[in-house]
Length: 146
Image (cartoon, rainbow, N blue to C red; front, side, top):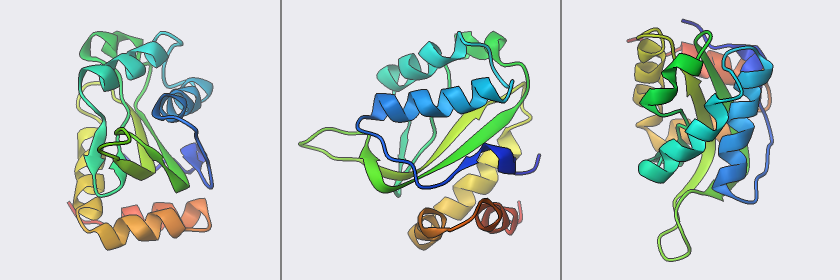
């Protein structure tokens, strides 16, 4: 599975983590990857267990029960230069890059592995957050060998 450039969104800003998660879901919905019922499941998933992964990234996705709402596999990459807090005031968890995921079966696992390897180095996350074009983000992630 390759990076879907039509799902890359540059220079976004969100007041809350809920706004950020909803935006990711809306990108997947608009692209025909999920039904509208997937969006509340993305918010529910974050309430059960934070989708913040550390190193300034978050991976919003739906609950297991919502897998039936996924029409085809898609991953939206959303750049948030000023960051959005996935924690709270006492324990901030700032994400500058979001990977909103809807996966059919195991199709998305190789791409998640690629993202995990790349983002394990915080310098690479900074490159994604500073990228000026969708092509630049796609090229950075496609450079990873899994």
